[in-house]
Length: 190
Image (tube, rainbow, N blue to C red; front, top):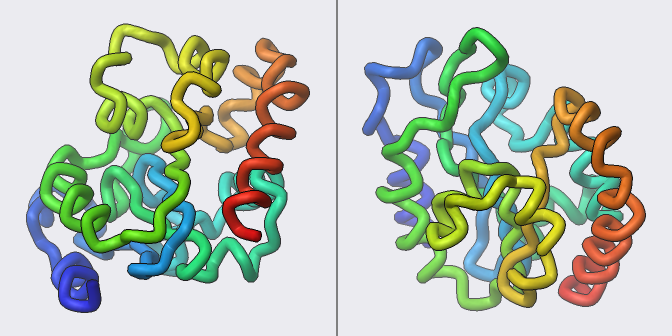
């Protein structure tokens, strides 16, 4: 695992497409029990090198019902985005994650982590890649049917403040899904 993480930290697969250059952000251990697969680091994360070190991360930790210390304990929580580097800014927010990372690294990493009990698939990019047979479903439909992906996967929308409109339209999410998420996380980490 150490060699694999070293190789990722030195990855330059898509360097020519990254406006700020490569700075892979990943936090994993062979002992990680829960893996978070989100999109790609935002600018704040790129600048600090700390995954989910922004408002989205605060929201995610609240959704999960865990402390910042537990969140950043890689023996408990592993963080492996679809794209490891900041992809730059587009017209309506950050660009999509680069397509090179997941095929190059995800399978290799998951093989090294034998203690994984749950994978959180956050957002459409992670869900489309790891649940390819559901690509025709909307994110909302997937999240409504989150129980069908358990016990291996827990599907979630992105916790970005930009998704407050989605949450306002889907009032069932905090009432039905988040309590089950917190309960599931607590069981895996006990």
